Image (tube, rainbow, N blue to C red; front, top):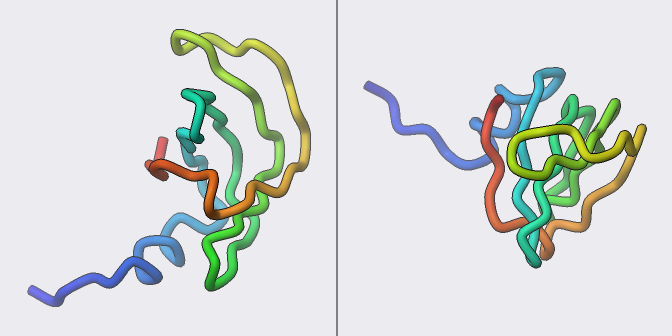
Length: 74
């Protein structure tokens, strides 16, 4: 079994749906369009979630990497 590095995981998530939890408890779900070495992430069709339900649609957004607590494929 080969060891996966963080960038391998991010590459695998490109073009797929991801869930981001941000500092302050905000959760955002969208399609991961791109990322960089600072883990800044561009999401398309992003929507803010509250208790698992869509609170509002955000469209295309850039999330600064130092605000991300975790990223999960969804």
